[in-house]
Image (cartoon, rainbow, N blue to C red; front, side, top):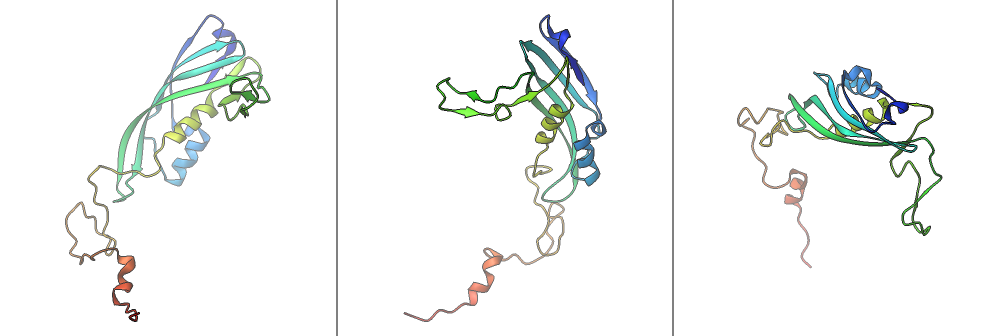
Length: 183
C-alpha cells in the first residue's frame, strides 16, 4: 500500500487493491478482541494526485463486517461503502491561517495533513484509521429488533417471554410507596 511520488508527476494515478484485515495491526486487534470480524477482504478504489509537496488520496472502500446486535446479541453481517479523503504533505507548516490575517490558527494535524518523507508514501496507517472510524459503535441487526427481556434474558424477537411488564420506569418503582407528610 505504498505510492511512489515520482509516478504522480504526470497527473493522477488510480489504485485498486484489496487487503485482509490481518494486514492492518489495529484491525487485527479488533478482530482478536471479538468486537468485529471481516469475513471478506477490504476492497479499496482510490485516486492519488500530486500538487507540489501535497499528495491527495481520495476514493472509497467496501468492507464486509460481521458484528453483534446491541439489542439481541446475535451476530449479523453488513456491508459498508465509505468515502476516503487523505492529504499527505512533505513539509508541514507550523500553523495554518484561516484567512491570512492571523486570527485563526490550527496545527497541520488539526487540518488533516499527514506528514511523509522521501519519495514513498505508505497508505497503511491513514487507510487503517478510516476503516476503524467506519465501524459502528452500536449496531442493530434490523430496525425492528426487540432485543432481550430485561428480567429473564429471553429473545423478544422469538415471541413474548411471559414476564410481567412493569408500568413506567422500573427505576422509580420504590417511589410508588413513598408517603410524604401534608404541608
